Amino acid sequence: MLSDSKHILYIGLGVGCISILYFLSLIVGLPLLAVVPIAVIALVLLYRWLNKEYQVPVPYSIWRVAILAIALVLIAQEADELVEKHGQWDAWAIWNLHARYLAEPEYWKNMFQNHRHAHPDYPLALPATVAFFSRLIGGFHLLVPYTLHVLVMLCIPVLIYTEVYRKSLLVAILALLLFTTNDMFIMQGVSQMADTLLAFFFLAAFVCFDYAREHRQMIILSSAFLGLCMWTKNEGIMLALVFLLFNARVFVFEWKRALYGFALPLVALLIFKLGYAPANDLVSRQSADTVNNIIDWARYRQIYRSWIDIINEHFKALKYVVILYLFYCLLRRKLPGKRIFVILTCMAGYFMIYILSHQDLEWHLFTSAHRLLHQLMPAMVYVFACKLADMGSKSGFKMVKL
Amino acid sequence: MKVPVLLILLFFVVGISAWSYHNKFSKTEDDIDRLETALRGAKDVVPPGSAIGFAGNVDITIRSQCRYILAPGIVLADNKDTALVMYPLQDSAIPAGPILWEHVDDRFKYFIATGYAQ
Image (cartoon, rainbow over all chains, first blue to last red; front, side, top):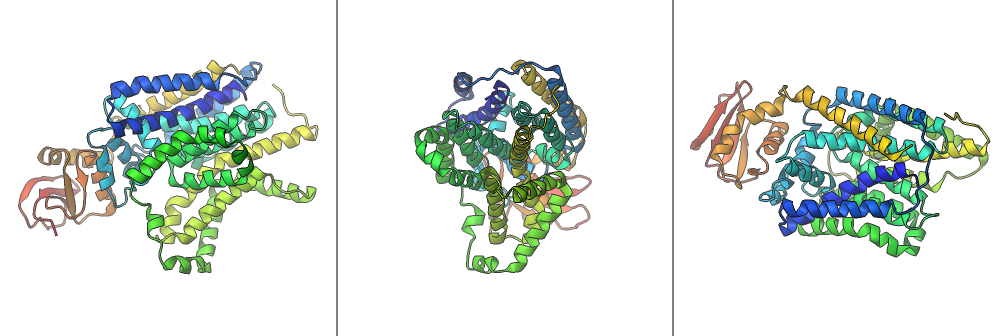
């Protein structure tokens, strides 16, 4: 793996590591003065472990940096236009609310008294990280979640770019273009909600797993990112399970390495879910109506219509890439790759969540369908960028070299 | 690409973006900020660590914003004797029980009142 990518992955691991350590420190009542050195030592050890091997030196190119710089500036400029001071509804009603509680060791358990509309069952990767940095600067400040979200949002195109440009600079540039021109990605990126962090972790799991064949140690990283998906949002549990299911043979065969990666996020999640969080409303409120929902075909039509509208409005370019690729597969009489099936199965899982939802379906779709697709979009772009780059190199098509 | 270049570039853009966000919003007030200003007095009346109810005639967004502003010290819970009561300015209603604190701004009337346990 390239050292550039490793540094971006390290940012993700750092966020996960800090959030878990901070949450555990709240439980045992450690003061911040003790948490900070523990976090610093953990981050240093993580950095050294991550950079121990597998570094492929890549020649320095001013053009590659310049292209990336332009893309990042364009995204940041658009983010500045689209950002709301307190973020979107869920940002202040859920994520920053939780961060405010977690930033106050005396009152953090008050969070679980908020039953209506505050979702105290949501995992804590994002709010615990915001709370940690808030405490470092003396209290909750909106600049902390905003800065964290911009960093995470920018890590996504940078990771895809650094992974793809060594195969094909042209495809890497096209992937960057997709992000710079996608207002939905940027708006969600600075919405101060956990969807972008989940999207980043899920993407990172894909990237690491692609190296697992050559370097088995990468299974630890891939597992860690899947664990962090679980520790970020409840949907992340489903994403991780789908990923595990499709790659079960590898994870079972390499169960020890997988366990190393999963252990810390999973322990934190289990402590949180079993010891503190109330039951998730989607699960606890299932009843006889669930069966009626499953056989109500109008719900399927409504969800399908809503998704198509969102895809046409926000992910049109990606839609055409997917259609073209499927057409290509049809012509070549081959199945799409396993990674594409993973993402499509995740989409099917999201679809079924809406079918089973006890909430008003129209409202539920309106408030969350675009965010669920946003969670999968970076992994989808990465998978297709890799496919296109590989197709280009196999067909002997020479890409632009700068 | 040399690693420090990538990281320097990334953190430089993040830094500029954060600075721009701060400049854009540090002197502007939105609905949540106005609500925060209005509820400042309530925090003096209700001791930290308390749970109070919520009543009145405002929508779920305002209720959630109040919860966000009063966190982490004060929790908005159900069935509490003391409650934060809010009415739109044009609404003539007032709390039935004893009033511990009240405030008016250009949108709402705010009260901390007792006698709300059911």
